[in-house]
View (cartoon, one colour):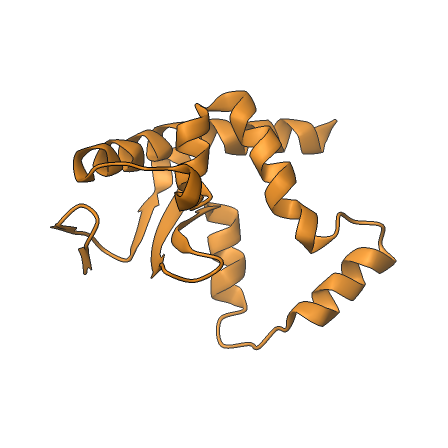
Length: 134
């Protein structure tokens, strides 16, 4: 598939087995909540594959989180942001979170950011794992 922002082609799902993560081209722009790329761990990919085809609405997930004292879904992006900026430049974190209102980049810089996001995302995953083990 073609990624308009960089004028090149890529597979929609690219997994970096050696670095422990995947990125998926979502390509949703022009909405209130844009999402260009979705980054996730290989463990999350396995969960997605396991539950592929199942419908899950937000309500049961939110109720489960509340019942078990987990972080509300609406706060996940903020927490992810705070952790990301500990291990990567803010511009890269903005790119990963599709914060395009805060990120003005040329086509050349977009491609650079894609590569930098691929480089820094494993550091973010390691930080998550270390924080979860504490």
